[in-house]
Length: 203
Image (tube, rainbow, N blue to C red; front, side, top):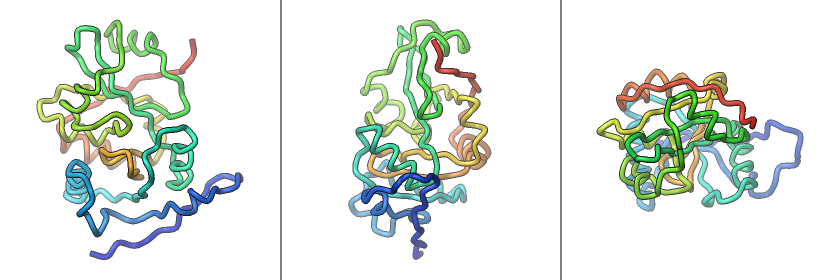
């Protein structure tokens, strides 16, 4: 099926860079998937199966805040910050979704979920449980958590938005989809619930 090419729109008054202009938005999955990773293709397969609409843009791996900001502008939505965390004993793992501009304070989250000494989980655990590599952490990875080892935490500000940006399990592509579809379609399909947390980012 032919995908409709979209035009990237800037929602602010700042000058759009050449790189942002080159980021084209497409409706749905890429027509040619020969060069795509299997984990990315599985993401599109599930979203299509669930009738979840999304816009997509391809880009270089985002390694800097400037690059992330350019993706935000191209998609017309703020990319969600996704942090993969664990307790000291590595018996509990968490995926935290929070606004990208908000600072993460370990102590603030620990007190709300009753888990002391939180830290960032190892890349090996990220690959084991989410089939995702560093730089591509995404709520979409929960589709690979078949044994339900990961607890999803969502900052209340994320839920106040209508749409969110996330990776399809690779860091060279970004998607824009509706929060409602994530909560009402995607999470039930992958067998995950979520806990709402209130983070201020303050000391």
